[in-house]
Image (cartoon, rainbow, N blue to C red; front, top):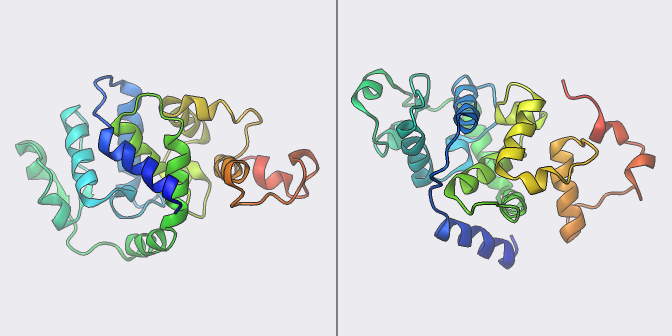
Length: 220
């Protein structure tokens, strides 16, 4: 990861504050991510791509907003750090032996951490509120980009349109740049390509690219 990327991500970690503006839409996004993660239908790594303390803060914050964690599976170490209310504490599931698929995802995530940081940096450069919620979502979204399916599936949304709503909610000025409705992973990497030249697009323009459908085809 470049020094600039490290400094930007660290700056947001240091100054990001909890936004006091919450919405039902945001709660729906988080609830869906957690639901898919518990059902093992997303491609997110352990703790969604957040570190241990961030994940505990993330759970605490959204529980206070009324999200149900009845179906969330915690590992024992994180469970000890989370301040769940009594009703949730009695019903929560603790998985003492993490599923092998999740462990593999975590290993792959760590191997591609530099790439992940570049994606986080891209998203946070379009932050609108400098809030910790945006930092969390940038890290989660970037982690999902490392999956091998369509991004809306990798992050656990119900549809591509729900993913668009999520990106527009957290990073509206970034979302608005996707004027051609490019597949989101392709779009993010294209932004990195244009900004830093790390991911080179071989065709001079999208219209004449032989793999056009890979970037703009229907996502099922």
